[in-house]
Amino acid sequence: MALVAASRRLAQVSLREYSRRTAAAAAASGAWLTGRRSFTAGMQPLRSDNKVTVHFINRDGQKITVKGSPGDSLLDVVINEDLDFDGFGACEGTLACSTCHLIFDEDVYKKLGEVTDEEMDMLDLAYGLTETSRLGCQICLTKSLEGIVARVPESVADIRQSQDGSS
Ligand code: FES
Image (cartoon, rainbow, N blue to C red):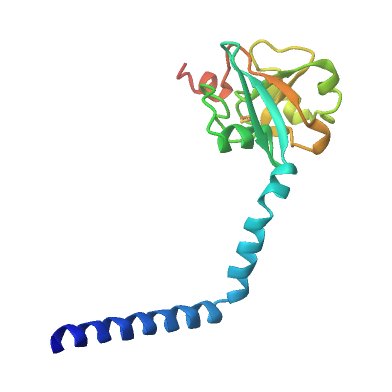
């Protein structure tokens, strides 16, 4: 009996000591961060309202609706949402492949901003180039792009593979 009571007392002391050490460690490393994190978590709905909705039309015609943060590129959105567009974004946004080719409606295309010479050079190598084609890695989301539709072309060209003869 005395052994059980001693074990309980030891467990309580250990628990108290653990709590005290955890609190001290949190204070030493910036306890305010913990409070800030919970404040941010409480703001989640507000942050989500700040997202931009993007509709992708996949190669098979399937419409996929996702959200991205302002400042994210469309390639970021595809990666963050784990969208399965075969071969998309092969150079990871370094403007070396054109596999992130997307096609937009004309009204959306006009909102996307200027095309740089470097992007134009890569676009010239894309399969199925249209007047309203852009590279997804070069398009950054803004609130004015809310609800845009981006069509993934039927096929992709990765210039890097053509150059090294691997495909
Ligand atoms: S991901 Fe390669 S050019 Fe955009």
